[in-house]
Length: 582
Image 1 (cartoon, helix red, strand yellow):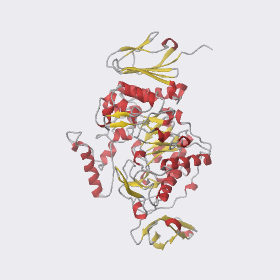
Image 2 (cartoon, helix red, strand yellow; image 1 turned 180 degrees about the vertical axis):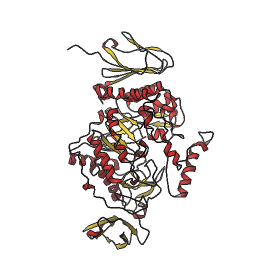
Image 3 (cartoon, rainbow, N blue to C red; image 1 turned 135 degrees about the vertical axis):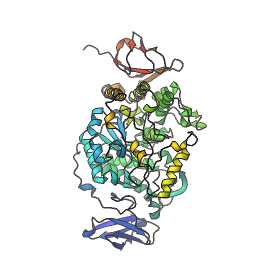
Image 4 (cartoon, one colour; image 1 turned 45 degrees about the vertical axis):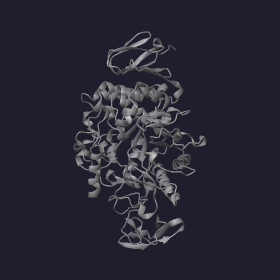
C-alpha cells in the first residue's frame, strides 16, 4: 500500500482526487491528513480538494507534467541510476561559479541542452554551475523567481529525471552544481498554499506581498516545508549547494532564525552523506552575522553575495549614479570592497539616508561571492544591458581582472566571458490575462521616471523579449568577442594556478591607490595587480618590481622598470614573483 499526505490544519474535510475517484482522507495529528492507496493507484496523477473545492496540486509535488494548475505525478527519486558516488566538490575558496538560466543558456532551453555545453564550461575553467531557479512556475518562459511548486523541477525544462541527469553529468566532468531557491515569497499564479494552511502572514510585508509565516501560529510546519525542500534538492537531486534568494525579505523573530535552522540541518545532512554542502545567501543587509558560524552567534551560512563589490566597479566604469549607485563612484570604494568586504560598514549612505552596514571582522574572503554581472544587475535594467554594452572592451577587461584577482569567490553570468551581444531582459509568460497585463504595465511604470519613453521598455509577456535574451553561441569567435573570451580564459587559468589568488585570507590582501591620479595596486601575497583607471598613460609604482615578472596584461604597450610600470589608459597588468633558481 502507498499513501498520500497533506497538511491542512484548519480544514474540516480533505479529499484525494485520483483516477477519476474522490477519496476521503483521514485526519491525523498536528493538522495532517492521510489516505492509503492500493498498488494499482501508486503511479496515478493526483490532486487534493479542500472541503469540496477545486482540485489543487500537492504542495510537495515532485512533478507537474501539465504545469502549476495541473495534477501532481508521483516520482521515484530513488530510481535514478547515479554515477557520482566518489564525487566531492572543491572548496569555495578555489571555486569559479558560472550562473546560468536554463531557458536562455541554449537554443533548446532544457536541462539536456545544458549537458551539451558542460565540456565548454570545463574548458573555460569554471568549477561550479549555478542554476537560476528551476522549481515549477507558471508558463514556459520566466526567470524562475515566481515558482509555486517548490519541490518540482520545471516540466518545460525536462522535469525531475532530466535535472538529475544534468547534475550527474556535471559531477562526471568535475563540476559542482548549485541551485537557486526562493524562500521569501511564491509566485502569483498557481500559488495555492494559502488554501491549504497558514503558509503566509500579514505580520510582515515583502515587495511581493504577504511574507512567509516563519514565526507565527503554525509556523513550525511552514519552516519544516521549506527546510525539507532545501534538504530534498541536496539529498535526492545531489546538488552541492543552494543559493538562497533575497534573505533580507525573509522575516523571522524566532530565537532560532530560519536561516540558522537550515544551516544546521544542511550541516547534519553533509555529515550523513559524507560530502561537503554549501549555502550561499543573497543579501543586501551588509550584515556579517549571516556568514558567521553558529557557534560564534551567526546564522552559519557559508557565503553571501557582495553587492558592494559590484556597485563600486559598475559606478566607476559607467559613471552611473542613479539609485543605489549614488553611494559609489570612487576608486576608494573599490579599494574598500577589495580590502574590507563591504564598502558600507556602518558608513552614511546617501541613497538610504542613514548609516548602513557593519564591519567584516575575522571572516575570510571565501565568505563572499563577488561579481561584475549577474541576472539581477543585468535583467533589472530597463533594457537588460550587460556591462559590455555600457563600457569599452578595455574597461570590461579591467572589471573582469578586479573580479578574478579579488580575495572573494568569483561568479560569472552566462555569456559574460565572451561579452555576449544579447541582452538579458525580464520575461514572463503568465496564462492569467489580468495578471499578464498588470506585469506588462507595471514594468513600464517602474522605469517611467528614468526614461523619456517608457513604452520602449520590453514587454515581459512578449515571446521576443525571451528570445532576445538567448545566448548566440556562434559569436564567440567573432571580432569583439574572441578577445574578451581569451582574456577571461587567461584570468581563470591564472587564478587557478597562482595559489595567492585563491588564498581566502583577507589579511594577505593590501590595496594602495590614488583618487587624483586614478590608479590602484592590489597585492595578493606575492602577486601584484596594477590598474590604470585614467584616460591617459601613466607610470604606477609597484613594490618589489625587480623581483616580479609580468604574467599577463590587458593591452600592449606595458613598459616596466625597476620600480614602476608604465601603462596605457584603462589597462591592467598582473605580476607574479620571479621564478627563483632551484
